[in-house]
Length: 82
Image 1 (tube, helix red, strand yellow):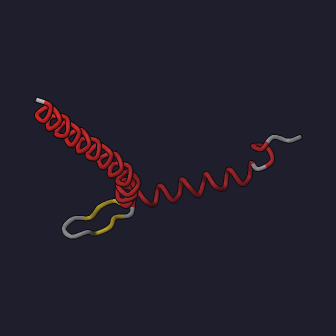
Image 2 (cartoon, rainbow, N blue to C red):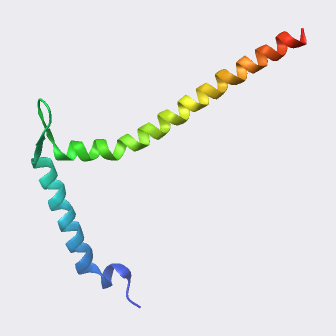
């Protein structure tokens, strides 16, 4: 039984070469935005990281809002108990 790397070596090399070429092209290409040009690799990086950042920020803000709401409810319960 041949290993996967040995069997699909040509395909893996082809995919790796294409990936490197696309990455190299993305470093060279500039997109013109409103005022200044931006490299395509930066646009891709921001596009890949932004959803993660939004999810983490949203989770933290919901957690903070939950903590604030909980502390207000606890304070009201203490006032009512007194």
